[in-house]
Length: 177
Image 1 (spheres, one colour):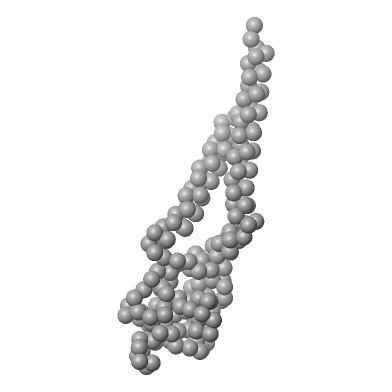
Image 2: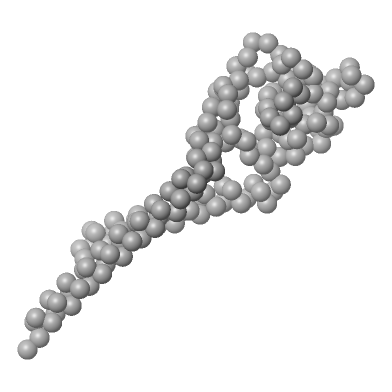
């Protein structure tokens, strides 16, 4: 095998290892910190949270919430859906700490007030495009493709190595006296 081909193979392998380590770290580290993720489905928070991004949010104490924070909470009219919007006002108008929110790209405040105790977290950061990957990974085809692509690379690489070794053995065998 030529030196250039070995170099390319080594670079691809190192890149694949770093990608795998990066993905594992991206999933494992936030979980170890108690953080959760949310796929950004609408443009209400663009450009801070682009559609298809993956938002990472950490638990937050109700008394720590302040105007300007981007918080995640169950939507009052659809409790199974989570919303991440910016806090515009924190008040005690409803007899308990309450937050009023608004999407950055929206002109009007949200149509509801959210009890601060209902907030499940504060968004720490968002990574563009990874929400698409995350949603795809939740399907059988997506999961299998993540396994199949590295497996195919390893299979092709090892097949190439076997062919090279067989050729080398045949060549060295024909040169013997």
